[in-house]
Length: 288
Image 1: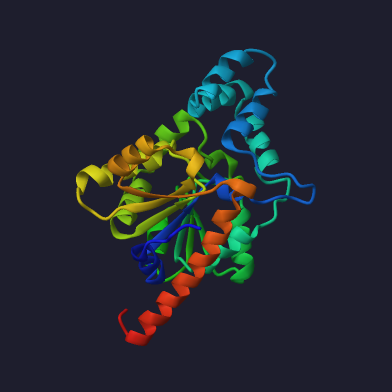
Image 2: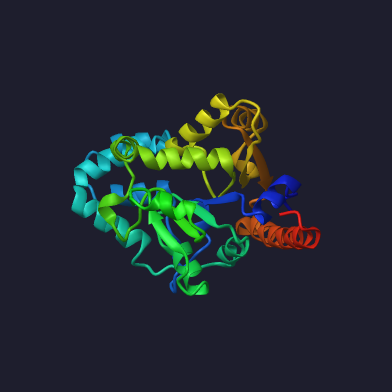
C-alpha cells in the first residue's frame, strides 16, 4: 500500500490540492464488451493501420516513444476529419463505464480536478453522482479563470475533449499552437502549481506541457514544496526517480502494478479515509 504523506492528506482535506488524472486511470474502465480505452501508443498503432503506406517510418517514432512526431505524421496523412472521427471512435463511442477508482477520486472531494484525457469517463461519472453540479471546462474556454475563482467544483480538460474534436490536442503542432493561442490557460496552470499541491495519478512523464510548467516552478521558485506523482514501481528506476524529483519538484510515490494495479485502487480508497479523518480533526479543532 502507498504510504500517503501527511502534508498531502492535509492539503487535500483543506481543498488546497489539484487531482490530475491521466490515461492510466481511464484504462481501468471497460465497456459492455470488455474493451478498455487505448493507451496513447495503442491508439497510434491502431491509427497507423488506417494508412495505406509509410507505416515503418512512423513505427520507428512510436518505438522511440516520440509519440508527438508520430501523431503529427498520422494526423497529416489521415486529414483532420478522419483523424478526429477515429479519436471519437476509440475514446467515446465504445461507451466506457466508470470504475471504482473514479469513485475514490471523486470522494477525495477536490474542488479542482484536471485531466489531459479526451475521453469523458470521469466527468460523466462525477456529474452523475453530483447531480450535474460540476463545471467542465476546456483549456480554451474564456471563463475558465472565473470558474477557478468561484466556489464551484471544476474539471479542467487540459487537452480538450472528443465532444469538441477540433479542440483536441494530440500533435506537436497542436501543443505549440495551444501554448501560443491560449497562453492565459498556462498562466492559470502555473498559478495553481504555485498555490496548490498537485497529485498526479495515472500519468506518464512525457507530457511536454506538464514538464514545462513543473520545470518553471522548480527553477523559478527553488526550495518550494514538491508535488506528488504516483506511478507503478516498474515504470521508474532509482536514478530516473532522483532526476525527476530534482528537476520537476516531485515526490514520487510508487506501488506494485500486479493484478491490474490493484494496489493503487486500494491505496486511493485508503487515502479517502485518511482525508475524511483529517477533515474531522480540522473541524473539531477549528483550524481551517
